[in-house]
Length: 613
Image 1 (cartoon, helix red, strand yellow):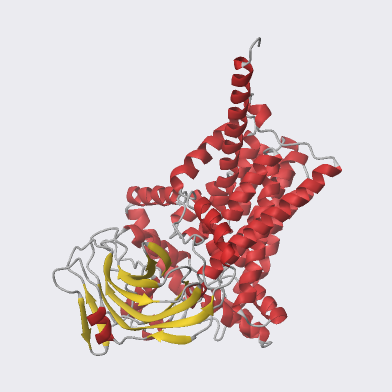
Image 2 (cartoon, helix red, strand yellow):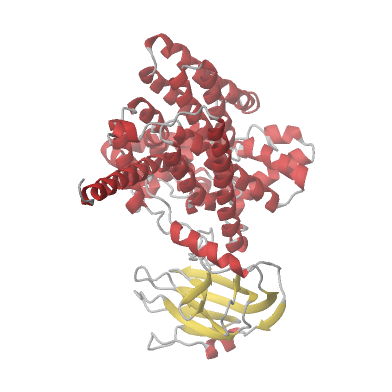
């Protein structure tokens, strides 16, 4: 069957079509919500600590609105010198304040709101894909978004990144419809949505003019300039209140938020490991070096305090000087960073094992050895000399240099079957890395993230982290509490454990959830760059061969935009999450084409094998 016939979108006129569409949307939303709730259940203690400083910044601004202090929400505590209020656009604290006003100041309410918005994004992706592909292929794209461990993980963090992708998806869908039906209303809607995204994150600041430029290519000459101007104008109109606020209060032209200079410097530092150019590689390094350079101790307390706008302008000038002096090197950095945006981040997937259905701060204490007892009872089989030493009320861990052994030591602990438990421990990591896991016969029931040394002003002292590790024992009569490193490369580990406490929380329930967990866990193991990227590239070629070149260009506007602009600055996966939705559409095109092609080949083979045919 020719490509043009396989990948053409379906007609949509019948009542049956709309009933099927409603069922599809509800199914996609249900899968998306279920995946995110299960991931939340697995990592409730973890999410409370991830990006805690940023979360508190947004929460503090939301509290200003809840307390009725609109003036300080708009201008900050001491403008124009203190410009920390410009660290992020004001949209996320506005949403947070609204959710807290309705449901109370509870993190769970905000997470549920973000889960629902992320489920809506998967549904929007279905409609976007259905503009280009048959409905069955669009379902595949939407289900990929619903099941994605990366999208699920970031929807559970109290940050604006996942929310900012929803209006970008809506803008992309409206832009495709604007070109297909030559609708000025859809164009204005696309511009409005991009502006709305910029209220949440400033990364899409230039997306509207970038998309408007592409409109000049894909539209008829008669419509090009009018539609492009309408799109850019609508976006600018939505963003204008923020820009006007910044000009009035801080006396500078700051379109959305500060940070371009900081992001340029840190982005250069990401690839200048030896600090050849003298630029900082982190926020902490930035503020401490500026405090020393300018003799301003107050600079060390924040990125944008003490003349924050001017400070960021000086950072941008320093970074730009490096770019001018080393254009070829910086060009290679931009290329490498752009390519890195196509990689899917390795995040936690939904656990195959049941997680505790209840989570309380404590229960019945069943195991509480001190540092000396831990050292005496530990099983250490790898090292000729024990790496564990009880000193000053802590269990010190020092492994030999260049050790690649994942397990350092473990303790066997009896447990009741089908019972929920909570392991509490305090950890400080001075060198290398460390992780704790609960294991039953090589089956990992729960594990902490890999813990690394934290960047601190005082290099001699590392903070001690309080770790909560809930797990369900299932059919185990005993478990092993294992301490080890990630085992990926030779590393010397130096850390300290303040003690461990194991609490029994009560009988496990909803054990049957293990079966959908196993299925979701197995599917999420396939969300890796190694197969998704080749399938996405194949999908782009198939769409091009099917005569969908104009719409493919619009579909690629998001990755092209981030390749061109975000690659100039420091980049994290959460900044460019919207790229993943585009990849899913193209992957769905490849999977659908393969399915139809193989089905036709099988039918032809069966016909040939029949007698008399």
